[in-house]
Image (tube, rainbow, N blue to C red; front, side, top):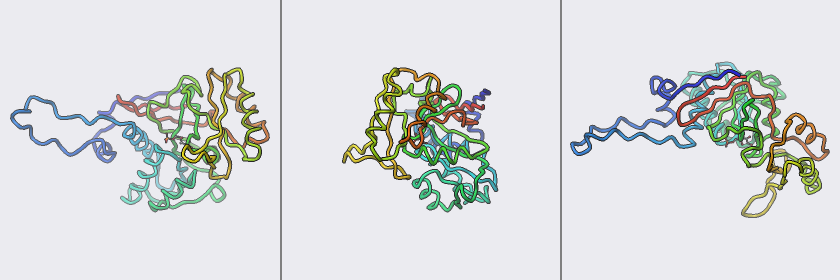
Amino acid sequence: MRTMAIPYPHFLGSEKPAMEAGLLGPPPSPPSSSAASLPPPVAALTQDNLKRIAAYKAVDYVQSGMVVGLGTGSTACHAVDRIADLLRQGKLSGIVGIPTSTQTHQQALSLGIPLSDLDSHPSLDLAIDGADEVDPYLNLVKGRGGSLLREKMVEGACKKFVVIVDESKLVKHLGGSGLAMPVEIVPFCWKFTAERLRLLFEDAGCAAKLRTFSETGEPFVTDNKNYIVDLYFKKDIGDLKAASDAILRLAGVVEHGMFIDMATTVIVAGKLGVKVLNK
Ligand SMILES: O=C[C@H](O)[C@H](O)[C@H](O)COP(=O)(O)O
């Protein structure tokens, strides 16, 4: 794996990308006499700033005429915004976007990005999407927004898959954040499937919970009219390929949120700079 680290002063270059990303405010006013010795205020980088930095960097990979998979979530939405900006400015043209969710479809449509689907464009040049976890081998957990199935279909059909994250998403092993590893299942007898999922990973201290809306207790329903069971692990689940195969062998399972060996590049924005990790 090749790593390239870009501290912000270099990444920001002419400062234009940073200004466009909303990281730099207007030039500071001349210091008043009482504040003359104080340095100008430095804007703190929020998590959303970092997501936007990673997203803008990823859009550098987009070229005119490309068919581009448009990811889902709070990081990917910055990339969609950026592509739309560049189309409006005439810096990109002839882009066809393949959205990975109804949410992204609506966003891209409202921004005027020409859209299509996998039936018409079975091979994509590039896809850009966020992730919930990234391990040292660039394996991912995705789907905490519930879009894992369409994401896996679209991102599995692209020549280059660029993942964009802030540094909080880096983990030693998948499942290691203690947060959910989602599995999309059919609604029919979901308790039966959830229990079979839990039993698969009993040795890893697995808990399997149906994803519900906290306000109503109603099940979360995916774009494909399925349910999500979130798996939580106390220990490392070990061999990811074996785990993937075991999950997919269960009849009620549609897909899981482990994206093994799919990312070709991961762009990580941290407080000290951007890292570009390549397979
Ligand atoms: O289903 C959601 C997707 O897999 C997202 O790409 C993932 O959850 C990361 O989302 P965010 O960028 O909002 O953290």
